[in-house]
Image (cartoon, rainbow, N blue to C red):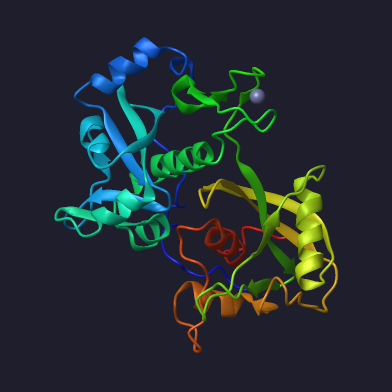
Length: 316
Ligand SMILES: [Zn+2]
């Protein structure tokens, strides 16, 4: 095993480790929610579809508005209760994407997509988890206005954590879609792939949605076999990450490769190949001779890859 490289302190994973207490017991308490919203310390994140509205600042933009400021930015869709931070209410306010788009040209505002905000560090990192929470739940509301059981318009209840059908009485809850994201390991080599959507230099872990009736381990083995033709044996869970594009949960794993010959599924991937630890190390440090890179620290893939390079993972 090569010596552990010095990659510096471990960076923070994006959208994770929220400081907000979700206070689920308050969601059914309309009087408490009104009190939290009326409190001077209340704050709201404003989301218009894929766009996040922030107040322009230097060096960081501020994504927190008062509730009144938030609702004045455009016709609001839903307001959802995210939870409490040191006793102060935190909310997500949805506005129409066209209203968010229009704010791009208004003085004092900075409006862009969440990926850019996270990767470029445009707001304090502590805001990323609640923005992810708000974005995912608001996205769910935007696509669940009608009961999937009977087609009647549904109503938001419980601070945005349920929609009820007044006709058939069905209750609908925000959902999150599990995705496996894994690094297949063959001794001192690991398997990375390239999606045609990636920037031209980037290589990352393979990933795919877990299907109904499938375990995490089975999904890891199936996706690796389907996308790269590699059979895997043991699977070890590493860590997970909310991924609000739109409502996924990334479940990070390492997997033991049992075969070596790669067969790339060109429908899914542009390419896939084995990388040595040494080569990955140069990619993590942005010193690869051909400029190849791994995903940025905001993404769990970075941490999955780094843990293996730092000899924290082994199937020996
Ligand atoms: Zn219904």
